[in-house]
Image (cartoon, rainbow, N blue to C red):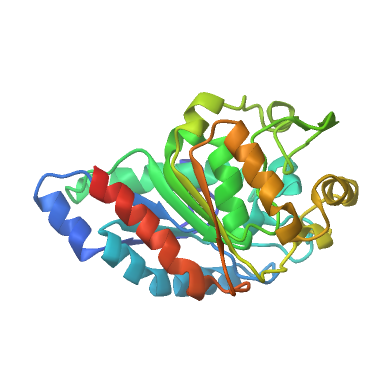
Length: 288
């Protein structure tokens, strides 16, 4: 349940896979996989988002079983009245809001993780402080941006179709300032967090998209300020695929450990692409 005194104002769901339980019995440390919720709808009724988060966990628990990890799914609301707070994408307005229940939900997620880890210790399950995080579409944007904000808490990240524009780990491009969520030019001013490039660049990441995916968050004012969206279109192109090569090149030039994958003939279809995320995490776990 939500626990404001513990630092979070939304419920979250936790699933411990059978393999994770066995690893704990064997004295091994278990990894947590965070799947940000994405209900796809704005509503001020928390139950709408709780139900969707539960269903997300129910569907994704098979991934946790396959990986032998613990799954954590927050149930953050995406508000209706304050529709411009695209919480499920961790947009700029969300980071700036003073609304008590939604203030700094990135830090609320960390509080959820820490609370879960404390409770799991009581069940004799030791967990890694660093998490795996995955997402697709809006939740891919959340995972992408959370990793920029808190690289010290992320072991690996998979980011599927992040709204047509993954955040760039640079402050400028061609002499233009890139404010959050385009880039990190004003990250410290906005959040009080100084970007840690060294830690961020060490994180294995997979950023993937279908070659026919035309889902573009820049077309919608709930996730982007219009001026910033127009700037990104001007600098990088007006469609997700048009921007892909430039964005990959920027990530490579920045020294990140990010792999870019464009899957031929697939559109905005999470289920068709999920296996790439799962296999990426599996390879990392196999190397431990």
